[in-house]
Length: 461
Image 1 (cartoon, one colour):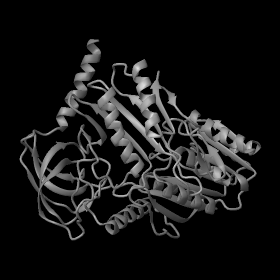
Image 2 (cartoon, rainbow, N blue to C red):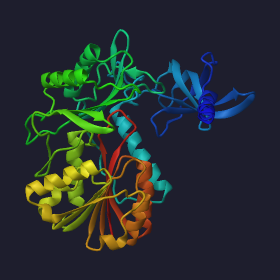
Image 3 (tube, rainbow, N blue to C red):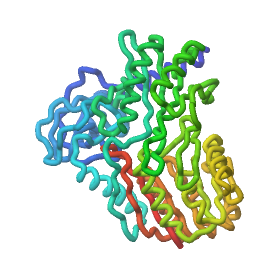
Image 4 (cartoon, rainbow, N blue to C red):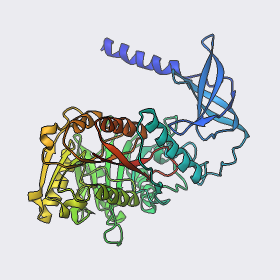
């Protein structure tokens, strides 16, 4: 126990060393550019621990060319994190934020910047990362941006306080939960759900309860209405929360909200309490029931563009592999046109949903699935002998180890999907060094007003 306390003390001391006193003297800084995380960046001489150092300063909600007075909050090897106290001069591209929660809410980085400037910055970020690794794209297509109020996936943080319940998103550079009042990102169905979660929390959660609620608005079918929200609620406090009475209250509440499914965490696994019908969404002609908390694309608009772009790249291929397949968002729309699909995914619940949907459609003979961690055990070239085309859609860190194996295989075409220009460029360099050509890149902006950008790269050899 003494050793554990010592380690905990060391962690606290490390955190405290990075914090600056609340009465730290304000600093004057001129913002020169926007950093990769969306903060304005400038440089100052700053005295810390009796040493004067040249430090980068990272200031949310600031723009290039602006002169500001900033309050330093913390300091580390990368530089100083600060917040605006006074804006002495504004950039011409500054605009009034559309959401009252900006810039405190961590969901958006660029409510204060014009959309044209945001798009140009994201495009330049992609070009810069590709140039750093000496990768040239034959073309970069115009960016396609999802409409406002179209975000269908959200993770709400819930905290029951003595006099109220707070439901929202994490604070930027802080620990509070921010109420996203006037959010222009969320689909109205999720905005209404947030209000309902506040009412439920006030009525049924004990003071001190902390919950994460993952919501997925299931896609429209053939232009019709949405089929409902799948909600997965997880207790984040040490004290048990889901009593029999509270489960009953959740079921009654779910029936009034027209949820497609309500699940809670039970011994670290989802337990479904309410599902009047089977929750479903369609990928092409395949109907899939995503598991609780499943990863779905952030917007239906973005999902459609991703599917169309991947289909364009793999047109004519008969045997394909879908790596980091999830529930089959990108590969299942191709099932009618191919002879064989290898779907590889480490999330067994997502992989089961994919297989169940394909089997029910009568295409089970075309599918092989593998439950596999591709970071630790990438597919080898000999396992891709029949495969001519590959979809690869890894998390933000990319899939360098798997790309190394693809580079050594006989695969002719790769559709690479990424939400991180830096890891995309690194993995692209791995493929192009082995003889692949990057024909084009399609930017897809599902994350308006944030520093994130989805990409699809078309590689062939």
